[in-house]
Image 1: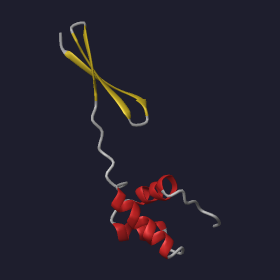
Image 2 (image 1 turned 45 degrees about the vertical axis):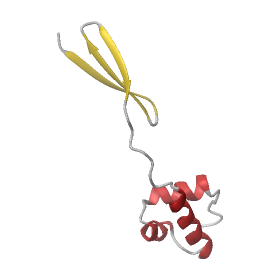
Image 3 (image 1 turned 120 degrees about the horizontal axis):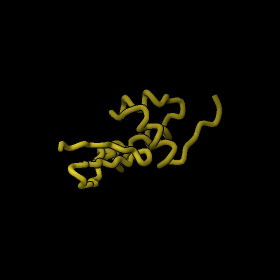
Image 4 (image 1 turned 120 degrees about the vertical axis):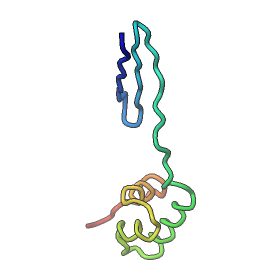
Length: 87
């Protein structure tokens, strides 16, 4: 009998790898890509740019710091507590 591998997503960011071979079930967690953009250096760089010029766009900050658009949004909202006041 062969081996069957099932990947199950339990929640966002939590995957489970199930290997089933001849009535034997083995569960091993899958290593995810580490979050590298939310380092202290990136947070400080984004904070300095955002507080220095409030008219900067998120894309301009992302290009300047060298991280993705989504990472800049995450740093602004989750780490620095900043939010959009008006459109």
